[in-house]
Image (cartoon, rainbow, N blue to C red):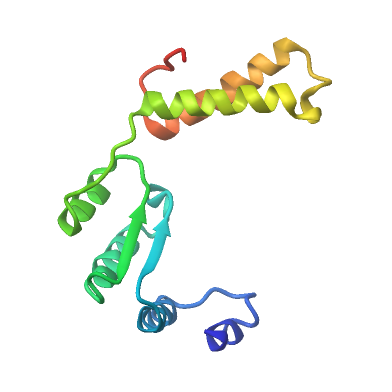
Length: 145
């Protein structure tokens, strides 16, 4: 694995997919269980390639490789992931929005950086962040928590 780092100019350039796959195979050989987390698959620019790679890597070492992937509900992603494993967890968007709202409220209350802002500005900050999160989870409207 150090070779991969060195071949990428000490981390200054991106490794090839082939290099990453070979390194992941070495990791699978070395450990009893390997956990891979892929966040925001829907935001991947090379979505078709990453879905193909996910299909490939899940066939390598069944039982050793555990995959957790997060994504908005996009048809192509859902189709591939359901084929690989029909068990998935769907997070109810309103629950996620409530968690985000609680987090924002807490930060606005305790973070010293926001002390100088009046309540009107804090409301704008909160509503803007919630609106962005709403789009992320395709929520039709924000539910009050």
